[in-house]
Image (cartoon, rainbow, N blue to C red; front, side, top):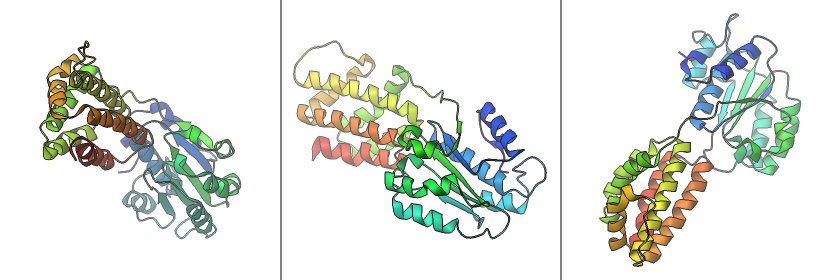
Length: 292
C-alpha cells in the first residue's frame, strides 16, 4: 500500500511533507538528494497524496486514486523519467500542453519530472512561467540529484525539500572485496566472469559506487607501475594478487586507457547513469579497451 510509512528513513522529510499536505500545499516542489531511488519513492508517494480522495491523512493508500497512482494508471498523473538523457525543449512544451487540459478524474493534475537537472537550459526556460504560475489544478514535483545544475530561476520557483544525506559509504576493504573477482576476470580475459562481477557492483548504492571506483583506479595505478617495472608501495595491498595478474595480462598503455575510462564512468554515475549501463561499460567497454 502506497504511503509515507513504506519509505525508509528521512523521518524529518516525511513530517515536513505531511504537515504541508495538511494545509495549502505548494504547486511546485523540488525534491533533492543523492539517492535517486529514494527520490523516486518520495515523488511517487507525494504524487499519490496530492491525488488522494481521503479527507484524512494522505495518501490513504486505499481509495481509487491511490490505487491507480500506485499501479501507474492514473490519468491525471504524468511521470517523466528519461534516465540520464538530456530533457529538451520539445518535452517542456508537451508538459505545458498537457497541463492546459483540465483533469480527468479529480480536481488535480500532477506532473513528476525525475532527474530534473537533465533539463537543458531551453527546456528550463520554457517551463519557467508554468512553474511560477501553473493552472489552479496543476502540481509539479521535480526531483534532482544535482539541484545546483538547475537554473536559479527554476530553483527559486520551487519550494525545496531535501533528503537526508545518504549514509552509504564503503571502506577500502569492502571495495577490494567487491573488486577482486572483477579484476581477476579482466586478467583472465573472461568477459562472462566480468559481467557476473559487474552485476554484483550494480547493486552498490551510487555514492558508495563512486568510492569503489576510486579504489579501482588506485588498483589500476598499482598495475601500471608493475607493468612498467617500477616498484612502488601499492596503494591497494589487498588487491596485490589481482593487480600483479593485470600487469602480466594487459599492456601498460591499455591499463592507462582503462584507468581513464573509469574516470569517465565516475562522471556517468554522478549524473545518475542507469545501473545496466554501468554494468555494460564495465564489461564490453573495458574488454574492448584492454584486449581488442
